[in-house]
Length: 301
Image (cartoon, rainbow, N blue to C red):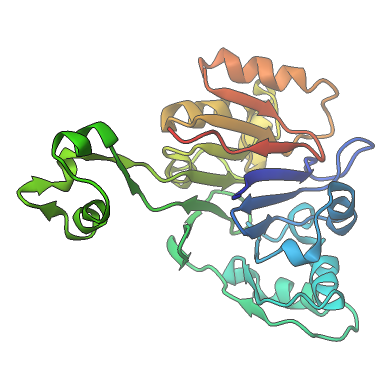
């Protein structure tokens, strides 16, 4: 049975707190695992969450600030220590190649796993497999930063009542699906499009076109909301979003489930992020992320 869920490993911003680890997010997508922004302590959080190195197929880093990347050294070494039997691909801003190299080779260890490096240097498609296309869009932050988006291909859902009305049964259903027409009956007459699911990951950024493009039509959007709305000038100055801004992006983009995360240590009441997000008029499902929680993707439309 396929599983599509977000495993939250850490939700703090610049510094960890007693209750929030540095960033870290694992997306389980059918049989694959995509690890986003492994901050310091990610390897231990994986252990606490029941996530193994063998679960990782991709590592996606938005940018090279420490709270989003210092865990790379430990995660990469653990992948090799556990001799993960499949290749692992790493995506990160090409401008930060020197930082990736330093983290990958921070200490001595034996490399046993094929780690493919695919740095990101422009908006667009990064990779494609049977169950999704991985895309990136540039964000607005003091250092170069990219957000990521998974898009499942659209599919077809056959409508049994319409098939029966046209007398199409058995192997003829497959023939119609492959050919698009059978005995004068068009595929569109007996089926409908099943939209593919979409996941978006937007970290450190000001409001920008890239954030909206990533969030467009997302079933699940994970987005930073470092500050509360009363500190909007701090957000602008440091390249971040407020809770209201993040929810505004989700509302404009038609997001179904919004996950707010990356909270500044200056705030002690996470419920205020929820209150300010709802004040924008966003009516979709809303989660204020906590370490080690699991968030399933919404059921298909």
